Amino acid sequence: MSTAENPVRAALAAFVAERDWARFHTPENLAKSIAIEAGELLECFQWNADAEAERVCDELADVLTYAYLLADRLGRTPEELVLTKLELTRAKYPVERARGRSEKHDRLPE
Image (spheres, one colour):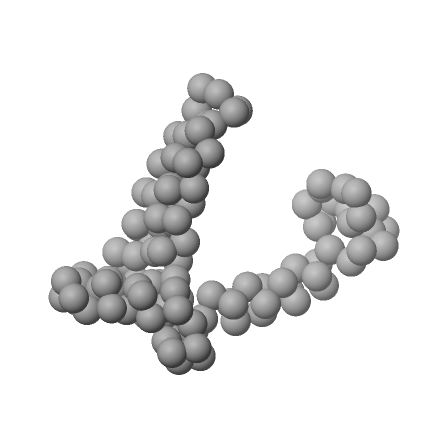
């Protein structure tokens, strides 16, 4: 999918290009950034399950931003990655065994 077809990817590409930051966006650095931002997202809920929605949204946007950038760096789209993984997960969690259950796939009833 080209950036013309995806306004989020286009906006991110322009933002990164304007700042000449692509050279810092190695897969390793982007993966680290996702983990760091995910920690900041979790921190929103550290002492209270009713986190401030605006702060949660800001931190989630940071996680998603780095995820988009990593997908792009790997030559994939987030949508493609999610749909591929969803098919694999669908096979591990057949609805007739997993519906309404939270167990890991290898602990589901036969």
